[in-house]
Image (cartoon, rainbow, N blue to C red):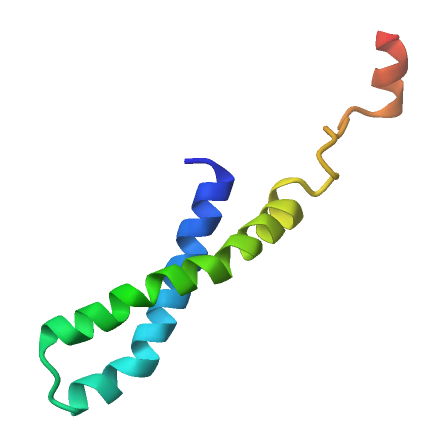
Amino acid sequence: MGPLTFALTALTSILLLQYIGKHFGELVGKGLPALVIAEFFALSIPLTVALTLPMRFSFHAVCVQPAGGRKRDHRSEGERKSVS
């Protein structure tokens, strides 16, 4: 799984769990049928994905490509000179 897919999945899951935790008690306490509650949470998925798409690119830019996309040369200066 690529870093962008991982970031989208992880961030979406976190936001959905927060959303469910926030609204679950309100919906169950009203005595609504389970199908209505499931539909309520299913309809919240597109909004959650729309919120996490920009975050996944930020996550990728900060965590996966810290050098601005350039590969770092971890060799010492002496090693680099001996190769050239």
